[in-house]
Amino acid sequence: MGETLAGWNRQTVLIVLLSLSLDVVIVALALRVRNLFRNVQARKRELEVLAATDSLTGLDNRRIAMERAAIEWERSRRCGGNLACLLIDIDHFKIFNDRLGHRYGDLILQEFASVLKKHTRKMDIVGCIGGEEFVVFLAGTSRPDAWAFAEKIRSKTAEVTTKLGPLHISIGIADLGHEPESLNQLLDFADKALYWAKEHGRNRTVSYEMVENPGAPPAGSDGSRITTSMS
View 1 (cartoon, rainbow, N blue to C red):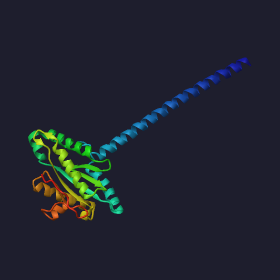
View 2: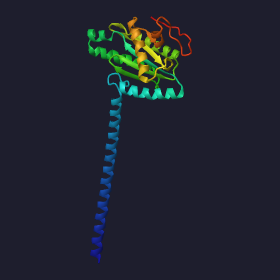
View 3: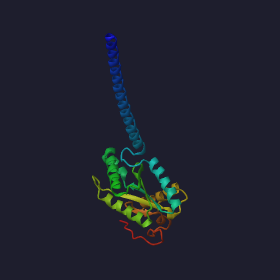
View 4: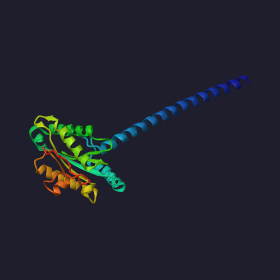
């Protein structure tokens, strides 16, 4: 009888030890799976950021900027708010690449992107949409305020010193008050204003109504005039 009880005790101890061992293994596996899941999620977030971001400037790439702008376009049209679009081009950018090399040109792009990041709001849509061209969508922003913002960015950019002197930009502005029929047409209006700025000396801000009525200062959304600085 004693030997039988001793045998049972040994079996019980072995069963308990095996159970504890299995528990330890299960906990270790669970922790391992949890860590793997966290790593996968973190990597997924990294890939999502990379897919949405221009790798050189850290701004939205063209696809993401336009997708976000499309949402803002619908919201602004539905709610009756204004949406301003600014197309920005770095003046004589090709000269930086030709004279100082593409690496220096990349530094210029990064420096300008820093100016945009510093002076835009979190709600603003800011993207690098190709080469030296950038776009900013300002939701809920009147034409005079969009103009003031553009001039501020132009002024702050001119404070950037390069090996070829101050950095200058040209800006074209369009907004819903110009009655675009689509987001693409809004962008097209801003592009025409930008082209006008570049054709008339660069280093200036031009609003779309100035293209339609050359020589006139930009009009506010309410028909008022905005004082301009065409330096």
